[in-house]
Image: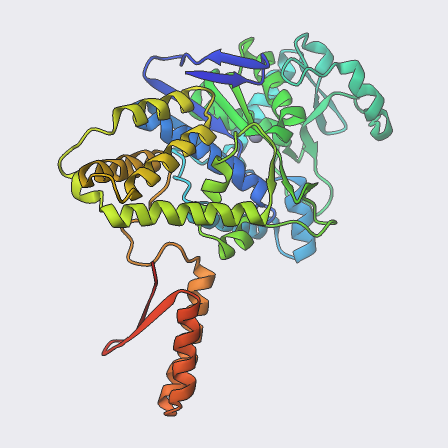
Length: 460
Ligand SMILES: [Zn+2]
């Protein structure tokens, strides 16, 4: 297995610290708002990494934190005129709901920063004792100059940072690159007691303490979006290195940016989409297919046409399964088609080349649908498609009665239209009722009036 390690800027052989076990950490959300589709890309990708390792038989421990105390949460609490705890709770719940809708498996541990406050304070105190941290007017800073290796992950030189940082110069800092470990609180802000007075921790310290708690001093994989390399991951690493003299993680994996129609997603450009918005428009597996069709390190453009394409492709997968009913083969414990399985593994073992793995699923789907092929081979292809697709997190909807090709919103709209038809029928307005039926049929939705009410389904 090869993994591109941001630390060395190259693909490296992946060797877990402990044979058969993988310990991984990915940065979770700061819960001040609904998360956006760029975040969704990261959550989905690390879900796939984890699923693949599980399928390979590793004992995986996956930790994803929730940052529930941060400047942004305090700002949002002021905006919504709610206590910060209410904001954190509201958006933590939303995060859990949306992750589940995305089909992301719940992590093994999901610590919240406020739950590990005593450990955070002890950690900072220890850094201070070791000479890597200093206090100034109730704030505690990390001294980047005290750590020779500072900048090793991002490749940034401390002097380079001085130029940009000078603008925001903080007189309490010994060096502009120094970062905050503990912040003295301003009036009205949430506080915890500490040796430096009342205050709250900085984000970089929260993550390093939470990963340590569940994964130990050094673990296998640390993941996140590419925008987290600097300063967040650099600063997590610096603290760990200062504390133990050891690396925080052996492999640093970062997924690429998401753009909208070629531009960076931003609220001011009005091209900002939350995962929640998009999940109302598309099935979660459409998004999964859309993201995995591109290599995780490449930037991706959220182009609606490409999403529609993913939607058609997913439909094609499902119809191949429906035709061949691979679940009938499941009980027989059949092996997968060896060449397909091997190429699939090769693709993923090459730094998670999901685009190649998806191409294999396409081939299997067309094999399964090949009319002039013998039935057994077609079934075998569908069965292999089903099993390999599940490794990447697809086909969760396969056994569900509800047609998976419709998102919650679209299904809701069909129900709404049918309620209008019901009204028309109650008023014996047959012309109207039939027109609704015919219009839905033209859209590919077939309805049937039964004694239990009107049933609908998507035509093949
Ligand atoms: Zn983090």
